[in-house]
Image (cartoon, rainbow, N blue to C red):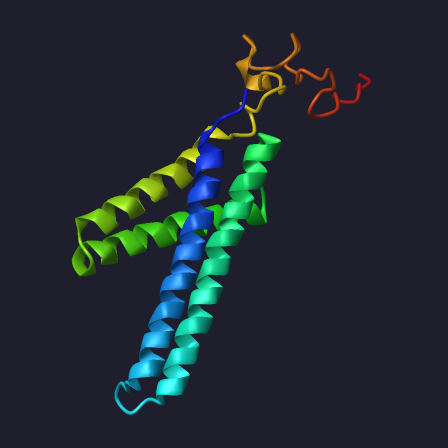
Amino acid sequence: MRRPVAWVVAVVLFVEGLGVAALQWFLGIVVDRQDMSLAGLDPDVMSMSSKIGGLVFGAYFALCGLVALLVALRDRAPAGFGRILLISAAVVHGLLGAFAWGLVGWTAFLFMVVVLGLIVLVLMTYDAQGAPGSEAPADSAPDGGAGGDGSPAGGSPVTPPAAPTTP
């Protein structure tokens, strides 16, 4: 069964990455053309750092979108670095949402919270146990997955039996 939430998250993160990169690039051009300076900083350095920061941040969101796209294509939970990347994107959206409330307004806050919720939804709905084609976990068996003798469902005991003793 395909879950559309990962597709939505992938598209949103790709668009957000492009938007962040374009906005930072535009701000870099504005600083460069107005020859503005902040506390004696070189305007060229400010312009270039804004452009580079926008490209790096946009690439980060695009990489997170790629992870979400892979989750959607494989219909499996993200693992390893991909999972860490999506968790970090959720944290970033939480922080950006908190800043957006005070600096930009409630609409930007609402957007950040919606994206945060979508990322968390991807992380929570694609769990390893509930993946399509996987069998029920061993602890769902009536006897806790253990055989009649207390051994695991595989049939081998956890510890070897005690050696016989002679009287």
